[in-house]
View 1 (cartoon, rainbow, N blue to C red):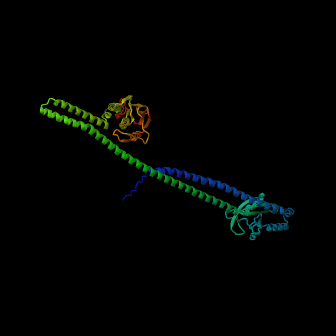
View 2 (view 1 turned 90 degrees about the vertical axis):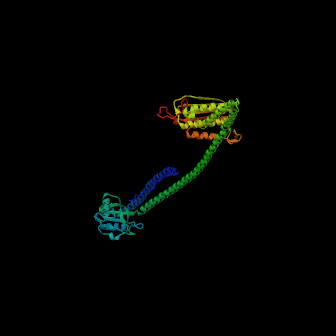
View 3 (view 1 turned 135 degrees about the vertical axis):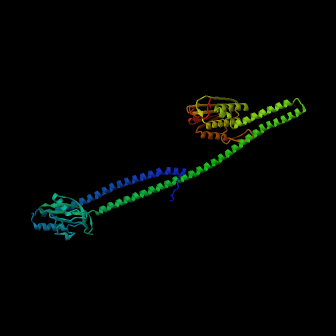
Length: 483
């Protein structure tokens, strides 16, 4: 059976950044939306419940007023009649049967046995016993009327068929008693309109909550689109800048390679090639003189040997410039000292080198970077500064190591300025400094340049992370005697 292998999804760096930017936004908006919806519903429910109570209380007050007025209107008959006065009972029933109001309002009367005596809206109930009558919720409505009347007065909430439609609706009844006749008298009002009003209010609240969710969702979508668009814009922009920088860096690498090749070619042609040609002519002249028995043959041979020695020294110098062996053999301190001494001997500039022996050692990459920075700085001093004094200081400390190069030259030209190089051509300013900065950035260090008309100071700080503890088993050669 062949196993299904799902492709592994590996999001790119940009997608990870987009998710990192959008997920907290989505979670925050979702939490805020849920909180706003919950608080809105709770507040609206409180307001709707308060409105419902107020409307029901208003209807109850109206019912109480109806019953009180009816009772006061009957007192001149009921108060003067005895318990067995049938005529008074007949007259009271007639009065109550005529007391209807609104579309569904009426008075009802039940005796304590459950027999209906007055029901003007539903006359088929009159003179029938409704003791066991229950509403749609299973409540014994007539029994509750009678129990409430026996206690005096009170409210009964129940379901009752509406006279206009015949369908059950919620009703609130106010019941009082005519105790001497054992009657439960009262009236009620349907509150389905109150429930409809509150239901409409709740539906309106839900609609508003949904609209709020829609608005929040739309705003969130717009924010996500804005984040995505800005991210795409920044991504495209950064890619273009990175491509441009990469192209520029590649071109600079090519230029540096060609410049280095040209420098080596010139030194080979101007130095070693001429010395070797001189050696060849000296040897050729010495051979002819030996053949001729000329006594000056040994003198010519000595000159050729001297030229050959000079060629060997030149080869060593070129090799040292390309990769100084002393850097690997003795460390950074001796390599810098040899570089400074050779620089002073070649240029005639007064030089000074100072270092402090410390136990910590630099790793190989840092040694090479600091050496190249010093080479670049000395080349700039030779070509552009016009300095007469130069000092190089290397020392370690608790935060790492510091290389400090200072001269008394004319300072670094402002950006955009040009100067004549050693070849007489216009040299571009800033490439050497950019090379220094890039090497310092690779070491996570700092480069500080102070330049005035009276001199320039270049200071490189290397962090402690590039220092190798000498107690390690395989320490890289570094600062030993300032290696």
